[in-house]
Length: 372
Image (spheres, rainbow, N blue to C red):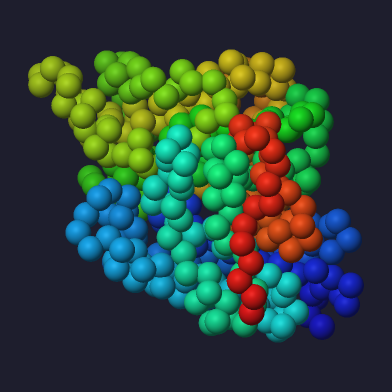
């Protein structure tokens, strides 16, 4: 048995996540036996450019959407399967030992106020190609119960990082969401984290993201644009609330840039600096308004690896900022690990969508099972 491999009483699960930024798939294989949460292997795979472009295009209406979405779902499931194979190889574990895969899919529409949310996924294909049961469609039941269907991870944050007075977890993915680790656990989206910055970087630099925040650091925040962005009414809503690319798209940003006086429009690097500042200010304001007793925030997600963003957050937040690395989970692994945990919760029949987070009428069992 390889070093670190699970023993006979273990419960190996795999979690897969491709987030709002559409940069790639993160995967974790974890032993969740006996209440433990132990990472055995992690892996990441960049999405092929063609698939990433198609997933982004499917966020807005277009021709032949049903067939295109089905083809994209199959291609995404094939990427997921590749990550699963890599995880099994790294852990030295046969597929038959894994209880289930938690695969979130790619959100292309999120409109809980209209009673639906859509994640592109092909879980039956993933189960067929891996020989492992798959849990997917984590949001729909909560939305059916009147909830936001998001964020999904607060119950996992509480299980892994504890409910201590004054502690919160901040996920800096495409969208930023905050989990307040109190009783009852609360959680909500605060607005864009990396999503708009990544999209702006792709448009102007042809790169998937602003590595280490270097481009934003070269720009200057444009006060007029920042004020226009902050005027978005969604920021003023009280939790429970969630959002995504349906609202915070490049079109949303372009409309606010175009509304500025032509002579005073910012250079691309200044827009990037302004977008970073938008993320920082809306997160800090959400903490002050909705979690004022917070004394420590554990950051995770891709944004936790952006030193410019993290330094700006540390200055703006009214509390201490660290990362989940200091608590035993690499920041990049947290969300994928959450979906391994959510898959286990489904298999064990434990509701994991919390009404205090989503606003649903009652707690619900997250996900649907596709047997191997």
